[in-house]
Image (cartoon, rainbow, N blue to C red; front, side):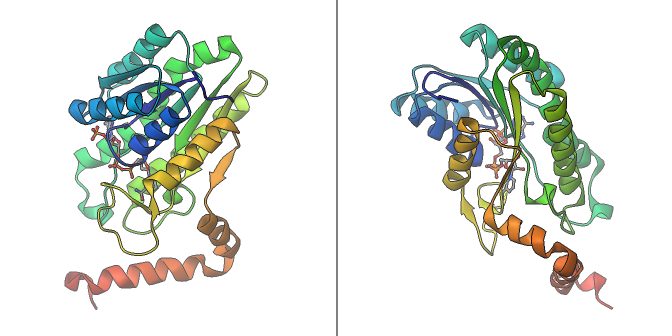
Length: 257
Ligand SMILES: NC(=O)c1ccc[n+]([C@@H]2O[C@H](COP(=O)([O-])OP(=O)(O)OC[C@H]3O[C@@H](n4cnc5c(N)ncnc54)[C@H](OP(=O)(O)O)[C@@H]3O)[C@@H](O)[C@H]2O)c1
């Protein structure tokens, strides 16, 4: 897909991977519809996108977990731009800790944002994309949608569900001209992970992967360590779970012994 003047929708564009993706699409000359809950932040990103050369940018306060707002965002973009070429379902929420300690409203927030939010925007965009016989839906999953890790059970479940949704939809859309791709970021330096230790990518690196996926849609845009992890999974998967569990337990005296 040629990105110059293409209409690109990005959810969760107020920070991190969504912000970096918006800026990267702007550099390619795409027109942009951006949303997030923090309006001032997303408006600032929109200004930056215009400075970088995007011919038209809109920014809206949207809570993607609310069906009417999520659908309204897409409907507004369709009115403003008369079409959608790329939908980047990036908005997401995380939480880490014991499942037994996870508050019910946080569980609902993760499911409503990471899974249902994607369903609402996608349902709203599909009729126009199918009618136009083109378009790319890029769902930002996670390493946790590929290989769930202990202490992020619900987050991993939402991302696994997102991967399943994406691949099923890809089959449904076969022959329509509309593509569905899944991007699996590895640990990325953003507000979501704070000062996470270990190997980290920059949001800009993941954004480049997202833009490349829009240009050349593929089923799974998987980063290097995940490919290796996938190959080694049968041998090392159980060991990894055990190791992560041990590290966590050492920091939690109540679990020792
Ligand atoms: N960072 C990582 O290591 C990592 C790894 C794998 C996958 N991911 C995925 O990458 C995506 C982006 O996360 P990030 O790392 O860039 O974190 P981030 O900087 O915290 O960005 C999350 C974005 O989602 C938006 N958002 C959250 N809940 C929302 C809601 N209910 N409605 C609308 N927008 C909402 C936030 O905006 P507002 O708060 O302004 O609404 C923000 O713009 C997520 O789907 C995440 O699961 C991240």
